[in-house]
View 1 (cartoon, rainbow, N blue to C red):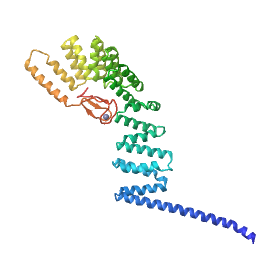
View 2: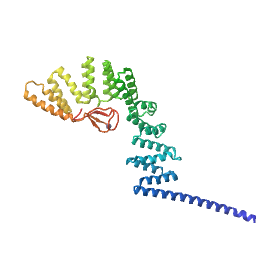
View 3: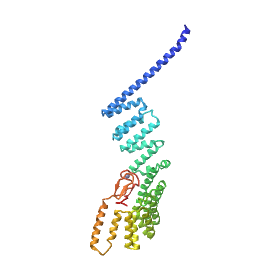
View 4: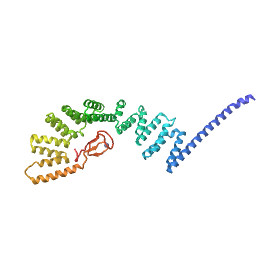
Length: 389
Ligand SMILES: [Zn+2]
């Protein structure tokens, strides 16, 4: 009898294993059914435009199945794009609070939550989120970019400068350029109070971070001129030309004044001739013409102007050409007509914008270091082409 029981033991084990497996399968099936019901209920709510009920139902589904995380991110991003920030916040906050998410998903949730706060204008809360991610491999650089955006909006330049070490470590050109402008902002305030050493130190830091920051050289030239150090200022203007040829026409007048004070006008015009040859800028042309006229007379200047206009016609150049024609004292009637044409051109140019943003195309008659439209630094430059430089 005992032998028989031993013989039945494997059968009993096989039966137990089979029943156990069946029970797990049944449990899995129940969970999946439950999940499926929660999803279809959520989707139904979403389709019938009952979004809050839809969110609750879908968040419930997340408690059961972690695989649905991607769907939740997609849903929250959709809400944010539609301007429904409260709903996006609710989903992202839920994901942040979720205990079992992998680190990558958790970081994404914190990052997206920061973006929600930023879109809602809640800068302090957004800042807290991005600060949490500074050491993250995937979100460190992106978070730092948003942090600088926040400090730029709040004009908290020092806060940005406090992150200098991390920014330098990332060695991202765009961030270095932004930080250099934070130093320039501080230098502008120091310049207003004429704090010579402080201005120079701040601008040296800016140039260290971004050697192409023409704003730093522009400010440095200003403080040198204020302190009668025109030779150093002249060097700054020359550096601006090397850094940004498109911006340079805006400093020609200041540079001219600087060389006048140095009694080195010939050197200045030699430089401007190179600028004109290399860039064909109308400001450089008009400036150089005054030198040709003074040295070689009106006729030579007109000849130069005509060949320049043939080479590259601009309205500003043409206006100057009309002015040169008016210098003839022989015909009063002729001068009156030319004056009228010149007036018309002046009025036409007045309604044209002097600057355009190279990043977003924003046009303005005033120069801004940070574009009022896209907030990029040092992108507003004199307009090129027929109506510009
Ligand atoms: Zn712009």
